[in-house]
Length: 245
Image (cartoon, rainbow, N blue to C red; front, side):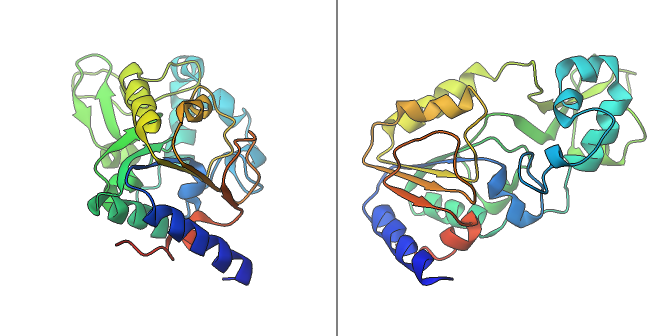
């Protein structure tokens, strides 16, 4: 790690040691170190070539009109069942166990925060691990979806839909309220691995009134958030160096 990152990591350590109610707000960059591609980076899904744009494919209308096309993309490019939590996921879970971190708010659908041991996780965009028949409501896990041929079907004949928020669909109001409450009660907000361009989630940080605002993201964030500390580095590399007392 460069001397610059050592200085910034030491400052982050000081902030964490001074905090009792940390909330973490994260995006796709948190999982790229687990080899899950993000949407907008140079090697992300938006830079790859498909007949339709990824934004079109993961929309509600595309799911309805071209369900097989949706699932061809979804199973190939959005389900990474072999992915393992990285240093960032693990450190956040450790901070929660120590009573320092009160909530993880994530835009990711991969379930890696829970796999690392985090318990209070607000999934703004749902999860690949929850799937329900649209006809009878029966639950199916991610393995069933990944291994299904073509369109995943229920025993009743209904089409199974992932509990993932697609474009054109609204976020869960209960998750929104819980996220806003957690941010408004936090003394420290750490934003990591997100470009802060997806609304309404990006607007949540306007509810923060605490002491310390930290941004850890490889590229510049889209919003000027007035962070006390901004670290342009892979988040696992930084959080992995933090000591939890």
